[in-house]
Image (tube, rainbow, N blue to C red; front, side, top):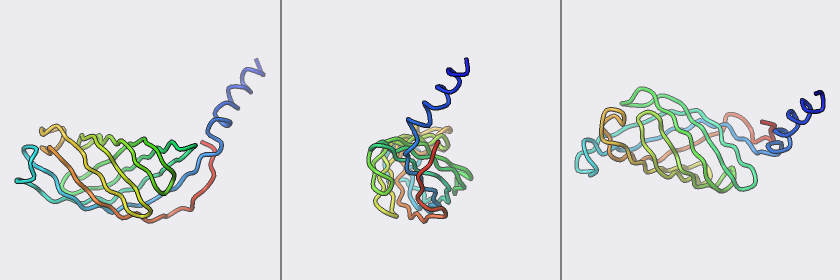
Length: 144
């Protein structure tokens, strides 16, 4: 029994033991196509997010959470390929609900997301953003 517990403890350490981790703050500005899928009727937006990016052997994951205008709160989960500083990911934003690609190059990020053009997506068909990130914690080797 003790060996089983030891093995179950060591597997996550061995699998995720060399993951790079970077914490960040991100300021975004963007536009949303409201009531449809055309930027003929658009609305500006902004967000201040806090998050972490994890990279391990070319696989990158990330989460973000923060405040937004006009949606009040927002967040994002993403997975993709690259490294801690340059990557492309597929992102899911739970609120307002949207899906799409996100790219990060150094301190800059950009995303283009497709919403459902209803209340769950805050009436947005598309959301396009550009962002600027700065680090509030150093790049570290971490055991998850």
